[in-house]
Amino acid sequence: MNIDELLNMMEEMLEEATGLPFAGGKRVVDADRMQDIIDEVRLNLPTEIRQAKAIVNDRAEIVADAKREAEAIVKKAEDRARVLVSEQEVVKAAQQRAAEIVSSAQTQARTMRTTVTDYCENMLRTTEEQLARSAAEVKTVRANLRQSAKNG
Image (cartoon, rainbow, N blue to C red; front, side, top):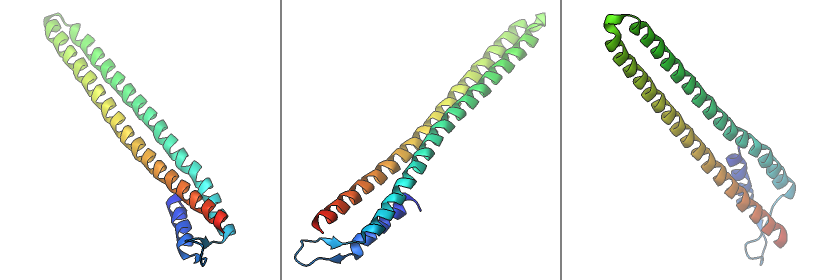
């Protein structure tokens, strides 16, 4: 089960718990069951953290791949430029074309890096928001549990 499902179970337990008369909204919950759910939440948190780390690692790998591809494009452009330059009658045209190819490759590489960075930023922001919501829900449930334990 994921953290959201576990938190929903805890919320259900609180909603279905028997109220105590004259206790100001305090309820009786099965402490063993609640502890089991809390333990399960703790086990699931590292999974979500590992997923966030995987996204960070994937970003680095994607950026590295884009950089390697850009370098290969630049090298190919430079190699192509050398071949063109070797012939005297096309030296000027070859230099101009080589510069265009290198410029195009560099532009393409910058665009790829920007796209990959934006994608990773969006994924990390979404993951961070999900983790923040989960942490807030866990904090609320823990506070409710503590309050129930004090009052019960």
